[in-house]
Image (cartoon, rainbow, N blue to C red; front, side, top):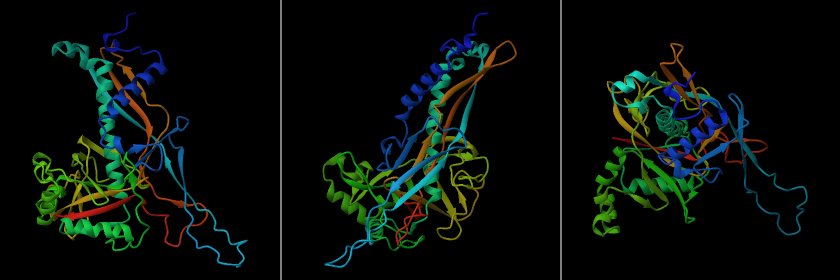
Length: 380
């Protein structure tokens, strides 16, 4: 019996061929990811990704971190033996889960009817599923970073003075609106080795910053070369130890009002539609206390003032474990195979890094906080 035209693009018999084929599609679409430049396989990256093909759904991928030595030395002839500082060891773990992204390939008759056979073929399904997966993975990282954060700075104004104040708070570890004193945020390094903190801001915050008098004067004087002027171009770039990057605003809707699950993992399965991955704003009737997040059914009708939650990110902020190799599944209909459905199956999860002290923590604890994330909430 000849194969239906629905499967005319790839062989359907080889599991290894399917997995290699879908992996190539995911790699091709990875360049579209907002987080791609900040992702690596070490703790020095903002997004720490681990690939463990032996891990299945419900299994843990363990992240291990070494602490540094902090205790004072022994002076003079004072006995040093027995006073050795215990090496600190921290860990965190992610439970990998299975996610499937299904798509209907339609009826081959309908494809002919509209003059587009490609919509019923596997290659087109792979391309669309890979694009969809990248958007949902990006949104999972945005959501985890915004919703998990333990330390927050609240700003009613947003100009150059505020940037300097925030930089001081990060360097001294004191002055947070929420969270109390904490260890300084560890920066990540650019390709040339310069240490920076990545400051993600949404379009509302960027406009508010560029409208401030202090920001306009500084950027105007700092960039005097026509189109490169940051006030004209709308770009902010690097100021002090911050690298400013504008992120898109979330555009979509939720099935309910769940963004993270009870364990702190991204609940991307609760997203009803996702057109554009990005930062979410929230409305607050009381300053800086979220009442409704963008994407919730009642957000547009909710009362209160719009607030942005911008993010300052350092090394090892987010963990993304991948388990088994992604696979491409498909099923022909039982009605003489006139149509089919395909699905991209991935084994992964997304979680904010929060250390667990395996032996002993520092006096100023490193465990139990989001070590690589600081939120900056801006009232509009």
